[in-house]
Image (cartoon, rainbow, N blue to C red):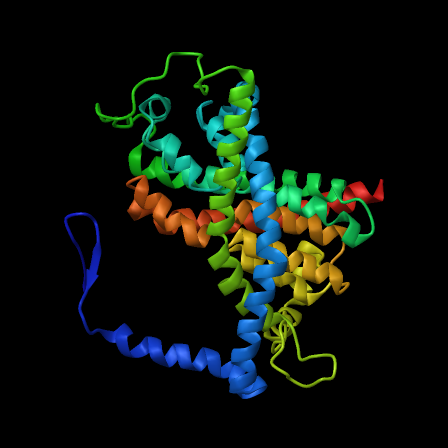
Amino acid sequence: MDTQRGAKGTAYKKELGWETFLFPLIFVAFFSLFAFRMGLANTINTMMNTAYRLLIDTVLYLTAVCVIMGAISALLSEFGFVSLLNRLLQPLMRPIYGMPGAAALGVVTTFLSDNPAILALADDRNFRRYFKAYQFPALTNLGTAFGMGLIVCSYMYSLSPLMGRPLGLAVIVGLIGAIIGSVISTRLMLAFTKKRFGKEAALDTAEDECSLMPEKMRPVRSGGIGARVMAAILEGGHNGVKMGVSIVPGVLVVCTLVMMLINGPSESGAYTGSAYEGIRLLPFLAGKIDFLLKPLFGFTSPEAVGVPVTALGAAGASLSLSAALIRQGLAGPNDIAVFTAMCMCWSGYLSTHTSMMDSLSCKELIGKAIGCHTLGGLCAGVAAHWLYVLLAAL
């Protein structure tokens, strides 16, 4: 093994290794795909122009959505609605997910924010005491399946004017699909963790962890109702700003590359270096397996496969692709249902699963967690498609 870990868990590799020489070859080969087709100058210009247009047209809008929904979610939490929702969901957790009722709080918090929100709960001794050792690692799969759920659902529904028809049914169906995917992902993960830890092993809790919260109590901000409202709005909006800023790398980097793999040349048929040009590689590859994609997901066009592919790395980036496909007439209501399910269930899990499992001290189960969640997201898309077909036919 050429990887070592330091005292603080930092990974170290030899200064020179096989990847030192292999990576430049792969890097050059990847960008040669674009340069040979588009020209080097056009490739660079398109990359920069596309990133700029995404920043102005998409990131700022998504940030505004995050700020508003952050303020709303903080208000819901401050005045007890989240606690009520948690209480209502608790009886469903063990029979459906095989998790203790406290895991419902993880569902609510990640739905209102993002995947890593589950980590704040995982550090709370009062939260950890409800879990067996085999149940704790599955929190990563459960939380990720609902990450950015409120943002995804709100954004997809906001595309109704662009689609020219209400998308409420599609969004609801997508939410149900994501729930189905979350059950599959969590249950599969539990099957692996049971073999590793056994069903009876208790979860170790350190004595110096967060202090216990009084039973059946919830924390609130100080002051009267008016002061609490203003504090919740401002703090929630501030958290929304941080979330909006955090999606910038995913949107600009991941979405730029995916759009350059999806789109073709300009309307004149030539490459000009303007935004949103590309080499149409993903639609070409998707067309080769359309006989599988069509019955499973019902995509309107091969280009639609780019949305769930982008969601693997960044849910925020995949949202902007949805709007672009609708403008081009390449996505319909069924696609929105599938997009909602897969973007919410996957919600950038490839970029967060590793760090989340590491934070839960379960690094050895990273591969299992990713594999289970990959299958769960695929099942979410399939379930959303066929459920929408069934409901649309009624």
